[in-house]
Amino acid sequence: SVRDPTGASIALYTAKLHHPNKTGNHVVLQALFYLLDRAVESFETQRNGLVFIYDMAGSNYTNFELDLSKKILNLLKGAFPARLKKVLIVGAPVWFRVPYNLLSLLLKEKLRERVQMVKMAELRQHLPRDCLPQHLGGLLPLDASGWNQQLLAGQNGRVDPVDELVGIPLEDSSIHVPGSEAMRPQELLAHLGRLQRSGVYQEYEELRREAPPGTFHCSQSAYNQEKNRYGDVLCLDQTRVRLKPRRNERSDYINASFMDGYKQKNAYIGTQGPLDRTYGDFWRMVWDQNVLLIVMTTRTDEGSRRKCGQYWPLEEGGQEVYGHIAVVNQRVDHHTHYNHTTLELHNTETCEQRHVSHFQYLSWPDYGVPTSAVTLIDFLGAVKRQQRKMVKALGPHWTGHSLGPPMVVHCSAGIGRTGTFCALDICLSQLQDVGSLNVFQTVRRMRTQRAFSIQTPEQYYFCYNAILEHAQRQGLLPSNQ
Image 1: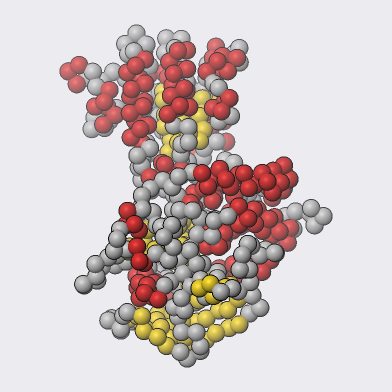
Image 2: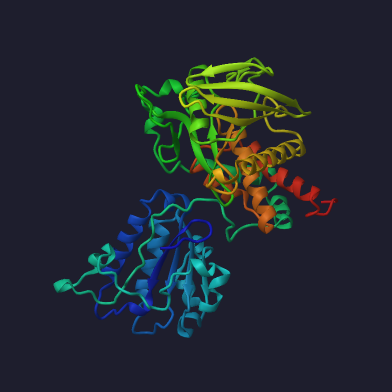
């Protein structure tokens, strides 16, 4: 019951426990397929993939069949290609490793890239100690109530210790954490140099082609459709924010999605720019989720197009009532590229009051991306400092994550600039923490929560350049590069 640091599920096949004279290949393959098929029903596994460990430690010729090994690897390649992140062949005996072409017999090009032979002692280089299954080497206890035992049960309910597979857990573990393919700034620069703009666009296209791993039933229901700013920008049912129930309310729907941050569950709520008819829902959500900070990355109007409603009182001293939440503008601080507004919220039903900071970034052009990342990253820094300050002010009353409640982030649709802002925050947080990051993995995971996040290849390319620009400013890259 473990996952790797990227949130991938771990499956274990133990060769030592296989006795070909007792159990035919078809039984092993049926069990393996059934267990993996059950595992990928999990939304978390669909999102984060599988790591398959082929444990050969302690096995010998009496446990091994070349034909079965071929079929197992072909099964993984054919049935689970999009989900399979890595295959680790652990503790392979000498007769399996030499001659080396024996491994080549088992693998084909696409899969070969993801397969590594490692010794037991080297496993920590691939998986941290607390992620390693306890039963490597064939020491696998039988779980009397487990459905995998029932599946493999022999006559009279007896189970031979053969072909046992560790069931893949379905618990939630979707936060962004350092993965095995993370790059340091110098490697990121080299990666960008190899790909050039066209290659990065192609990398984005690979992400764009991946279908969202969930459903949109609630967004598409007739009653809720009018609450969507754009008919083609919908919320996944699996990650949508549900409004707390109220008397006489027909729906708990708002076009908003929980999104994980770096080592933080539900760090953001990605949402659309509120519509006139959803102002009340928006402020209900802010209150329900104890939000301290709202990030707005658009103007209300750009060019001749309405991008977002004026959902808060604009002038200092102004006040408006949205549903049962009264909002008072206490102060506006104007900066070169953004405005910071301090709002006081009053719940007219409970007579409670709270403060919320509203940050509006003003320097994102009508179309495309900022010409320089400096102003956006400085804006991100100001947002993070304010969030820390407000969490600290909560004191012992706040018992959640040390980084605080979710931060609401929105643009117009809630996927383009919103996704870009969140991706930069995640990547730069990881860079600061461990010195490496992976843009592709970050955006891929983000899109499993707020579908279609990062709306254009230009925004995806901007993420790369913004990170490198920041790395250079921080002295992590030479200035001449």
